[in-house]
Length: 303
Image (tube, rainbow, N blue to C red; front, side, top):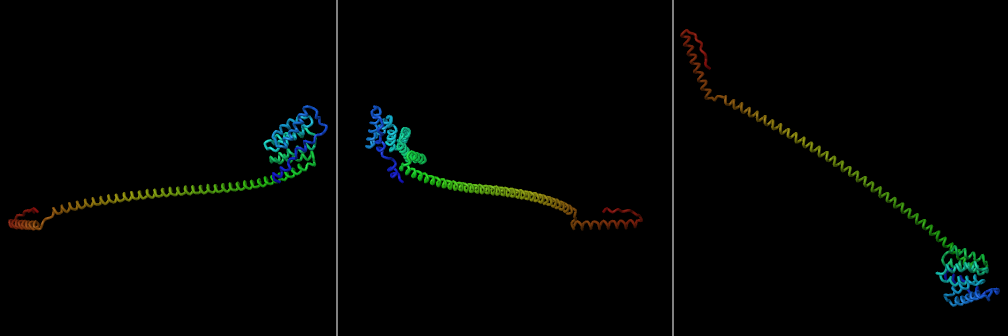
C-alpha cells in the first residue's frame, strides 16, 4: 500500500461526526450557544479549506457537552499538516478523555494511529489501532491500517535483521582483514627482524673479516718487520763479514807488505852470497895461516 492510497482511507469525513448531535444538548445557554456556533463555523471553514478552523473548534471546546466532539474536530483540522501532528494528537487525546461516545473514541485512536504511521512510528501506530478496535470492533479502517502497519513492521524487522547479518558479515570480514593485515604486519616485522639480524650478522662477519684482515696485516707487518730485522741483521752480518774480510785483507796486505818488505832481491842475494863466499875464503885462509904458525886461534864468524 503506497502513501497516496493510504491517505485516501486514513481519515473519515469530519461532517459525519459533527452533525450527529444528541437532542438533549442544552442550546439555550449563552456560552454553550457561542461554543456551538463556533463549532458550526469551524465545520464550514474546514470544508472550504480555511486555516482558522482549528481555532474555531478550540472555542467550541468550551461547550459543556460537545467538548469532546469539538476537540476531535480540532484534531482533524490539524492532522493534515505534518508540522501540527503533535498538537493534533493532543486534541484527539482530549476528545478520548472528554467523550463517552465509542465511535468518537475509536475514531480518535484511529487518527492518532494514522499520525504515528505517517511519522513511521509503527509500534505506537499499531497500539493506537488496537485501542481503536477495542473501542469499536466494527472500525474496519482501523483494522485495515493495523494489518498494514504490522506488515510494514515485519518488513522493517526483516530488513533490520538482514542489515544486522550483513553488518555482522562485514564486521567479520573487517576482522578477518584486520587479522590478515596483522598477520601481514607480523610477517613484515619478522622479515624486518630477519633482515636486521642478517644485517647484524653481515656486519659482524664484516667486522670479523676486518679483524682478520687487520690481524693478517699486523702479521704481515710483523713478518715484514722481522724480515727487515733479519735483513738488517744479515746486512749487519754481511757488513761485519765485509769489515772482517776487509780487516783480514788489510792484515793480509799488511803481512804481505811486511813480507814484501822483508824479501831480498836476487841481486842482493848474489851480492850476499859473494860476500859470504869471500868471507869464507878469508876465514879458510886465516885458518891455514894459523895452522901453519902452530897456533890455534878461535876464529868467530861474523855471519
